[in-house]
Image (cartoon, rainbow, N blue to C red; front, side, top):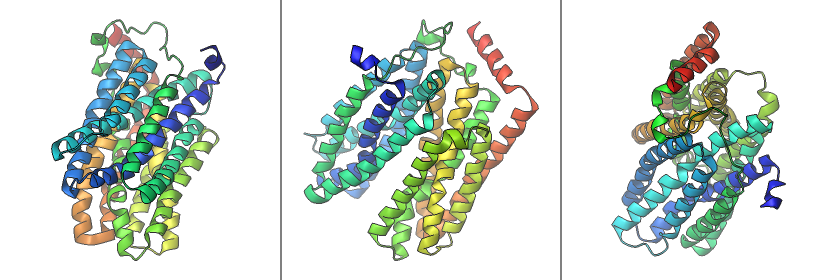
Length: 402
């Protein structure tokens, strides 16, 4: 353990981000391929994926509540890493439709539920230790691309079972790096004596509610992109190889933005980042709905750095600046539950109807939640300028303690 203490803090978090996204980057695209190789029908695969999304909305806030009430955040990350590994190992002998729906749904819920928890403890550590969160998070995005390419190559060469081998191997690495995470004590004076001390009203101020909903609407507006852009572009005659490059180009833009975010965004207020993301989102989805030429699609894919990443960083920075430390994980979990659960599930369902009726024109439907999110972010910006939000949040926290 003495040698571990000499590893810089930012490298420990970066290592865990990398290992986690090596798993996550294979789970999203290739676990359905594994399920198909085990004989599951497309309809059943859809049920498993949907159940996993719902489960993530449940797992993440519960784990966050445990983190914030006990104050032992690294221990919770280690425990959930063990649970994720166990869930994927349990898939090895799995057979039968019911089991092949239930177990993958559980694995998806546990694995996906870790993201906001890791974000929460890392952003707090970055403030405390003085390292750039964006660069650490960029390691995760790069690992996601590595998993896309590496696991995809193995699946193409050896079949769907190779995906599970990759996922389990990555899960062992994620567990090992979880033990490298430093202890993450909260500020002295915070009371974590009992889980009953956790009270939602101490966190949900009007400003935070606006930040939560506005960022969730903008991020959730990616529903058509995630669910149907590949099909829409294929119908336009774009080859699968080029479509793969379009996806990779968006992630590359995300990585560059994350890497440079500390210097680029130093003077931007968090709520203004959400507004920028909303404007870029309305632009991106509106123009993609017109089935533009390939070169224009590449340009519009670059806007992923704003539509997703700027919005994502906007909420994280808002929570870091204005949410009491003992509610950090809960705030990130609520954001993930809204954006990656409730809103994304809704926009994806709507996108299916829109794609069937209008093809690529269905992108335009995503302008609605993006614009709504932008309007709420503007409201938040006005609120932040008209009163001392920082002071009011501190007073709310003091009332909650008393």
